[in-house]
Image (cartoon, rainbow over all chains, first blue to last red; front, side, top):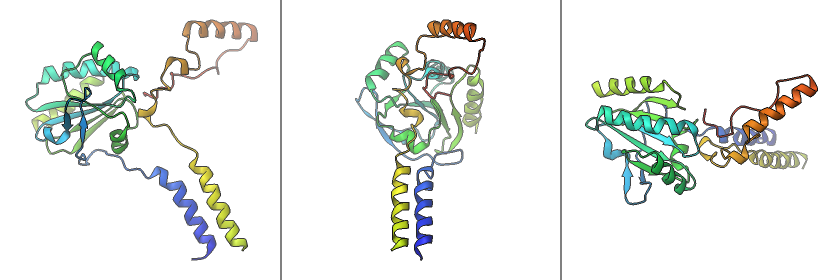
Length: 166
Length: 72
């Protein structure tokens, strides 16, 4: 290989490499992971909920739409029940105390894991905050919802009910 | 020798490219703080903008939307 081709190759590698990060999208099987709960008391694994439809929600205390989404998800969980459905939240605050304060004001009854280093959102390729991944009973992502606005709940609920019925 | 210098130059240039980094959506906690906004005081900002366009006879093209949290 001559030096000119080598130079071109090196340039391409350096430019393309940062953009070649894989992300989880519809149709992908979610990777198994374990994370500590927000209070650090126990370990939480997504695989524990295999057989249920799972809404995996990435959120942070500094994210204004999360202020809307968390109470609505909590209401949704109460409405649908946990026989065939569960919400697993992953908090990505760098300072977990901020998340704890947020949860004191806006408590939720579903499990919340902490990921202050942001490893999981990196693996999933989160593009906005909050982002929710709807995972079917076999662990396959069936729907991805980025951000959260008033009126989004109807669409999310319909997708959940569709997966539970399958 | 000339080619080797070219390769070295490209290599060094690539290191400069590596200095450019993007902030991921989940890393914007500090950017989302009030003090990081272009105008953290909305009321004062509106007043200043009003004074500005009254004096300059122009409006718009001023500021940016959002507080930098990258939520949407």
